[in-house]
Structures are given as C-alpha cells and as structure tokens.
Length: 388
View 1 (tube, rainbow, N blue to C red):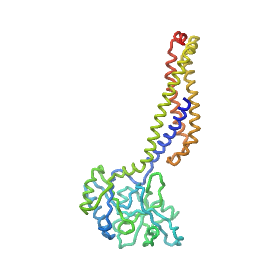
View 2 (cartoon, rainbow, N blue to C red):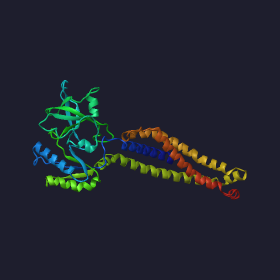
View 3 (cartoon, helix red, strand yellow):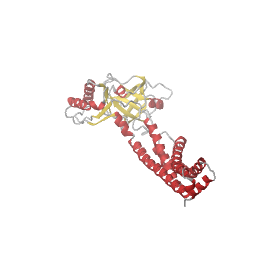
View 4 (spheres, rainbow, N blue to C red):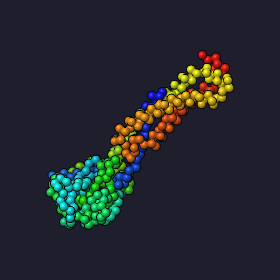
C-alpha cells in the first residue's frame, strides 16, 4: 500500500504541475485577438507574377474585394501569421551608428503586411501611426516596430523618426527606412517563447519578402465565409491555389497541442494511479480489519466507544498513507526537476501544487480507510467475540 501511495503521489504531482502550467499558458496574451479571424494561404506563383508590382496589385485587389463581402469587417495579407512556427528574419543597422563587424548585425523578425493588418489582428498601436495606403513603392520607406524592438535598440529614447537600414541575411542592405509607429508585442512562433524584436514593412515597399497569408476579420462565424472568400480569390485569378483554410483560434490551439497532449496523457495515468491506490487502500484495510474482528469485539465488549474504534482503525491506515506520501514527496522533489522543459510559468517544485495534490491523495486515502473501518465498528460484539 505504501508503494501504491508513493507512485500515485508522483504521478498526481506531475499531472498537477502540467495542468497548472497549461492553464498559465492558455492565459498568455498572444498580442492579438484570435476570435472571428479566418486565415488561408494564397501563395502567388513567381512564374505568373514575376514582378513585385504585379504581386502588390493582386493583393490590393484581393483585400478590397474581400472587405466588400457581407460579414467581413476587414482583410489583410502578411508574409507569415503569428504562431505558425515559421517566419522571416532580417539584419538591420542604425543611422548614425557605426557598422558592426561582418555577421554581427542585429537580427529582427520581419513581417511584410498590408495596411489593415493591425486592425484586422487587433494589435494595439502604442505610438505614431500604422502602415497605410500612402506607403507606396515610390515614396520613402517606412517601418512599424514592436515595443520590444523599441526598448532593445532605443532604450530611454523615442524611436519615432529614427532611421534603420535593412536587408536579408548575407545580402546587400536595402534602402533606409523611417520608424513611424510602435505596436504591441506579438508572440511570433509559440506562446512559451518571449517576444523578440519585430518590425513590419509595407507590402508595396518591401520586395525581399512576399505576402502569402490572407487573414479576414468577420462579424459572423469565420468558417461560414470560407467558401465565399475562396471564391473571391478565384474571381481575381481563377487558377490561383488556395490552401490551409483555418481560423486563428485553430492555429492557437494547434500551437499548444503538444502541451495539451502531454497534460492529458499524464493526467490519465495519474487518474488511474489514484483509483488503484484507493482500491488498494480499501482492500488492505478491509483485510486487516477482518483479521482484527476478534480484537475489535473484545474492545467493544470492554466498553470502547465506536468512535474510538473508528479512530484506531482509520489511524492505522493513515499511518501507512503518510509514510507513502513522505516517500512520494521525496521522489517528487527529485524527479519533477526533469519536467522543467515541459512547464511554463510554474516551478517544478511549486509548493501550492504539491500541497494541494498531497492533501487530495490523503483525503482519498482517508475515505478508502474510513469505509471498511466504519463497517467494522457495526459488528455485534458477541458475534465478534465468537469470530475466528
């Protein structure tokens, strides 16, 4: 019984830590709203659209048509949606600062977007302005940066109006761009990773990355507009492939699928272990008390109260349970440390989780001990004295 209790406690603490971690992960602010967002891949073939101006014209026409659909609030395109576990990065340098040694330029996560991207994704603007329709190819290039990028590269300064130069990794730099806005941080690749410096460029001005994701903000159930939006894409180009149609909530759910599966798997094992521990304690106590029926009869014949006998019987079971809990806690402090990589926002030795799980197991054990003990106190002393 002691071993069953110890193993059960180990599994229960592990499951409790994962559940606590998962709940904290679910409460993380991704930096945007996921409700009422429909997404799909619209990747333009380079052979059919070899020029940047052609691709820009396609996406401009597409977003305007989609925004005109009933039930659509806004639409935008971007190179990569958040939480996709993929993205583009670019090296940058700053106006008025010396050029760093080769290969040591800062690297920033970069998204090329259309004007309504921030409003579609509900990403708040903290300062300056958003990218708009006036940011065209023939005009000076602009960039909107994240709050982390602002704090990292301009600590204690106002980055609005500052200039940076950017280019793909290991490629010649592009033209100078002026910072015109600061937006809220977005979890780019997964919720468990802290936001990195990020910047957003106009899809009409930046040619080194091309949009391939369409995101639509709706006033109705997003999935109900999937066929209509896909048909609109084909109205612009009847041969254009459309794939990976999903809601943003599905993308968020898939981004934490591994943590959810691990939690459920260990939770099932812990639940089975708790059930087996309860059954084992009940069986051991029933057998033990059956062996002591004669003793119980003598005690009660000599005037022992039922409550005293009940306390004696339950105390015997509780003693074994506490030994098992002590062993389980020692094992938990040693073994749960290997779970550090699976946890988010909670320590592997979180005292609240460990105490709560321990009390739960003790409570279940007390109940499993109490039932046979209570039944034993109802035995007629005369019958118990004749019991062999």
